[in-house]
Image (cartoon, rainbow, N blue to C red):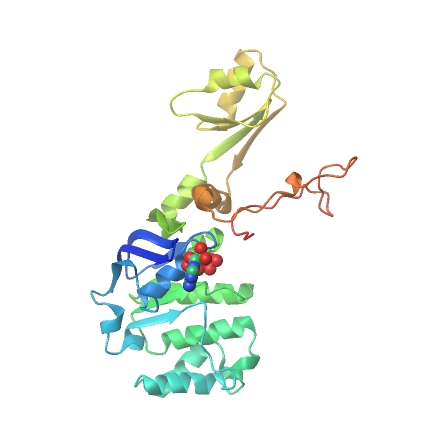
Amino acid sequence: MIEVQGLTKRYGEKVAVSELSFTVRPGIVTGFLGPNGSGKSTTMRMIVGLDQPSEGSVLINGQRYRDFRAPLCEVGALLEARSVHTGRSAYNHLLALAQTHAIPRRRVADVIELVGLGGVARKRAGGFSLGMGQRLGIAAALLGDPGTLILDEPVNGLDPEGIRWIRTLLQDLAAQGRTVLVSSHLMSEMALTAEHLVVIGQGRLIADMSVADFVAGASENVVHVRSPRAPELRDLLLSADVTIRADGADVLEVSGLPSDRIGEVAAAAGIALSELTPRQASLEEAFMALTHDAVEYHGGSAAALPHQPGDGPAQAAGGARVETHGAGARS
Ligand SMILES: Nc1ncnc2c1ncn2[C@@H]1O[C@H](COP(=O)(O)OP(=O)(O)OP(=O)(O)O)[C@@H](O)[C@H]1O
């Protein structure tokens, strides 16, 4: 179990993590999510003692990381900045790590097989692709057979097969009773991998909930309604359980009412509808809605670019309207 209590990290004026508290339970995969720059890496570095908190504390199975006598056998970490001696082979890199931590030599071959690097174990790690490097980092994290795993964006650089492999691996490790904390900025990937979510934005806790609850909330239907008499229809539909967002003069986005009920209300009032479309928010849309206020770097929309006189709206090659979303875009 990892217990994060009132964690704060300041870099001069910059508050990277602010009064963050959450618990990571064993036996399940916990996804650690947040937009770019939200403080995930800083939090993970503080968990494994690479950064000192300005305030607050972290306990892993009741102890501070620096008090572990055999840290690699307690906590395995894959952090963004990997330290691999590029001239060494994968095997020798892991062997050196094992020898300095009194880990039996046979574990090296075991973890190499586990991460699928058997064929390249004697090759120089400096020549590895990003995906192979990630696998080597995961092998190092697993070397001491730790009960707690902390992985910062482990699917970075992995192809779809690699992503599926890591998803299964993390779930298997959790099913063995280990504590698994894995960061990502991809909600859809975490929905498939994790059972619980901790979401942060600008260093603060935004949500601490099960994936099932997040998915249930995200799949709440929204009905897209277009009518020349939209404001009138809006007044007829509004009630305590119904939320309506007006989008332009003739468009309503209605939550809390099924589309057939909206059609009935409009027909009864003699209001013509030119569009009535139920749609489900995707998990990424729900995640962006949740973290929108906490996104540090908002990308622009191509629609906001100045147009040359006579230009139509910005179009992609396939004819679709070009729009960039803010989450994840650094400027
Ligand atoms: N050593 C440092 N000095 C100053 N500011 C820092 C330092 N490390 C991180 N920060 C700032 O703290 C904030 C949190 O950064 P962090 O890397 O923890 O975010 P993150 O959620 O891991 O982002 P990403 O998904 O982009 O990796 C950012 O605004 C970052 O610029």
